[in-house]
Length: 232
Image 1 (cartoon, rainbow, N blue to C red):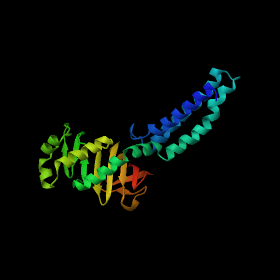
Image 2 (cartoon, helix red, strand yellow):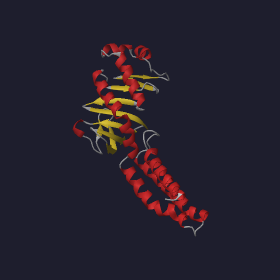
Image 3 (cartoon, helix red, strand yellow):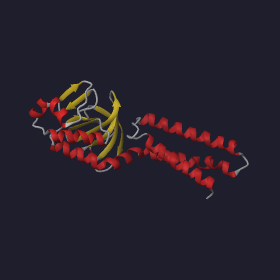
Image 4 (cartoon, rainbow, N blue to C red):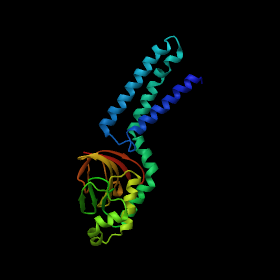
């Protein structure tokens, strides 16, 4: 393989990785429709580059046609990786142990709803606090939710550790109800995305997620009962 061909292969790999990871929790998931539009934008840009390369390098040079020759392969791979939610798969594999720890710890700590305590609306079980403060330490959480901690017989150490684990995987909030656990990563209004775990895999597109009453419009099945979801 020539040096130029190696360079094109490198560009190909970087392009595929970019398409795979751009629409992932690392960068803020765009949702199914915008994900497709983003993919099309990159593919059109790649096609234009492939055509322009012929004129820039010279149409008489066989190597000038290399990007255009491999473009169909890139297109197929990019659509396949997008279809299987490759970016979400990678994020899940890197955070799987922490997500499972959140599930286990929340049950042990008797916490059925909690936010990362960084946004305007902060919640612990059924107590909502709305202000611009953030509660990220044991002392801050204990002071803000003293009544709720006593009423629900919670251990502030476990609550603080659970909040820290949400931060570790960029989780905005967690909710458990009827055997479901929902880990919201972002979104606005009723368009949200994140991870969920359903009892006996009892979830599919069109279902309403318990506690949120939001309709699932897209699901990517992961492992051990976990899914990546989008709602509307």
